[in-house]
Length: 443
Image (cartoon, rainbow, N blue to C red; front, side, top):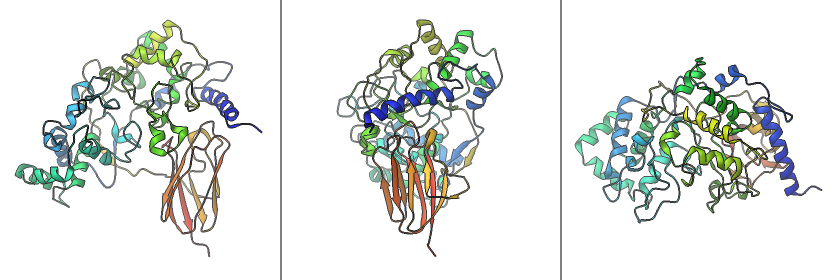
């Protein structure tokens, strides 16, 4: 019988083969660079998604921008959201870890706020399920803003100008409330869309937009370096959680999920406008792009929880490392960036797929397959991990709250349903994996 450790080794070998397929090559060598394909992969969207329960309006966004700068939200009266998320520093703060109100450095790096509207979870460990939930977290954190939302609501309600602004922003509920306060901040944060850069000009067909060394870095990024396995799409993030082998005791996503397989895993950061957000990583431990590339090339700490998407046993020459850095620079503006404008579109986060009557679901290539199923009360759902990665199944719905342990490659999770209803399943480690389950009464 193969041990779990042995199975993990096999999974990592298979991950290398899967990664080669992702970037268009084989285990024997890389495939030719397909510019048409990668231009499609990295194409920017034409709208900003908004949730149905908090659609953006000019009045709401304007109020959120004011609240973002309002120091009355803090307990000390001299700290605002903008104190850490500084616009001129790409909505970060330029230090490894910000100094807390207790005089000690905070545990994690201040993340930039670009392109949050496309996120699936928020904070480095993904503990907030919405931007609205994220907005209230730092305000009431004793070490960050030490505020109290109920007290802030009373203060703002007593300000006639603010009371009028809330009434205009929320005509259906023209009150200063906790919910309206966090909704306004979230609406503002969704407008923080990173601007186009020279790389985007290449994406839209300008072959001269990138210098030769930058273009070589792009080919390394999607090929030999395998960076694209996690830094996917136009935002250059898969929204998943990975242990990338940084030293430290912070358990990250593992502590949130209560799953050891997710220990040391943190959300993949977007690479947009990162020139302006140094230093890097969740703990601010790497000062430059060069340090980041060197970490992946020869600085990874080996441990059982390392991400299966992390490339193994490859080397980068000094020239290749410089080329990767040159490419990364093209994802940032030449001058301090300003948010661009995209029209908002109200959209629901969920599965839009035709449901299939089946009780067995696979998880290959970080996807549930099928993505929507039909069951009857009393039937048991079997979710088979036929992927090369560890997953974690979480299901919420009427009378059911389920959270599996780490589900290793080859493992099967079984869940029974004793009542009808609609259920949503996600992977807590790879939140882009979503499964819709509709359970009908048994006739």
